[in-house]
Image (cartoon, one colour):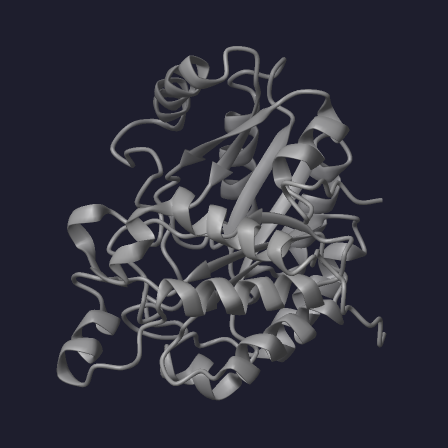
Length: 313
């Protein structure tokens, strides 16, 4: 089943949620004050080179507030946009399974209990190496009562690039995590970045090929953001690398869409960073323009998600 139409020639999250829940589902981005094994020294120091000071949770709630306060504050904003929407709390900043399972149980179940009548599930951003067996077993039990989505940062399937950006996690760990999660029927959403330093067009297309071989349900695609006060910003200042133009990004992303498994739901096609922190690329400030250009190119070339997909599993 797909949710394509003439305007959006791919599976949008909006249409998927309307089919599944019958209403708009608004994500409530929260900061659970987690850290990351790539920051605390257990796997690495400093985090991934592109990661912001807020652990890529720049638009999440204020970690100095309780999770309930964050939720209710953001819910009020969402209600003004979509008065009749349902909600999905999204633990976004850093690695949100990086804690003992007892602590995770306390956090997740607190969040799910804030507005149970309108909450349809929970989305949890984390790393493939932060999913020990006891955590996956707990997530499997939770998934029987509500919809659990695990968002995993892959960024690239090129392990040389992964070392360059200090990912400190292997493709094998990613594959293993996906396999274990799917045994419990847990939805997986993969994050990838286009325009990483020294990546070629072939590298970015190979990342989609890698994902197509896995049992994943969603994908987030966005451009590399060079943000102030990151290792990547320092590297860019010392030795500038190629930054994708809007046209390059649109062309690559459209090609990825046309080769992507047509059953995968596309959760995101454009990134946005805090305006004052953004160094490059400046065109990402116009997120709607980016998305419109992708839609226009798909229509112009009469292309759609999965047009060139070949199931090689």
